[in-house]
Image 1: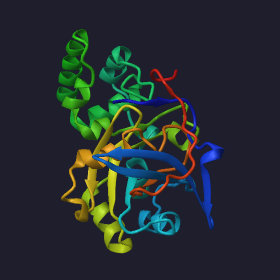
Image 2 (image 1 turned 30 degrees about the vertical axis):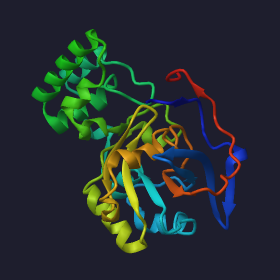
Image 3 (image 1 turned 180 degrees about the vertical axis):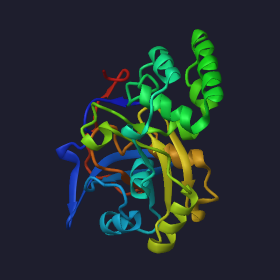
Length: 268
């Protein structure tokens, strides 16, 4: 179920400090009778080519406890891998310009109504598949079903982020970020280097997708892990909280938390 919030979720009332580390309480969720408290860890703006293991060592390791699970935002991992595309390197063609005029606007970011993003999808998957996805998506919308375009085009297209002129971060105005490369290896590297249980996710206010998880979580169903972060505690604005620590707090009292008020739908 999608849950929408307006604006930055880093409310001052929920801010906590541990040494040099700033994090924000994101409240408690209950999954199959277990209470999980979430802590969104604030970082600097992570640039292309940085070392994600060292970033986690700096920001997350001081807070991490055995039994925690760290949710990793896919955009930050891709930035570290420099798995990105500059707008200047995307050459617009006729089909991207034409089809983007009929695409549905996405309030949670830039959708295929952005010609450069659609052209990048064509470059990745090929024109025939994208044309088929557009056709099927258009027919499905007539019957009230959404998301068919991305079901056909695939997760690598759904995961394209960026080319967003309204982003608070100028870098993303002319840069697209693709899905992380070798997501299973990312989680394995983090677990081996830092001993952190982790899951690499593609999350927004509409949906949360599992890309990979560390081997120690193999016995836990993906959906049960994702149930702990369905409300996208990392945020959708300019929070700079790409890592969320999820902790089983048992019967212990939760930390004081001021919840944000959800809105009825995407905010223009």
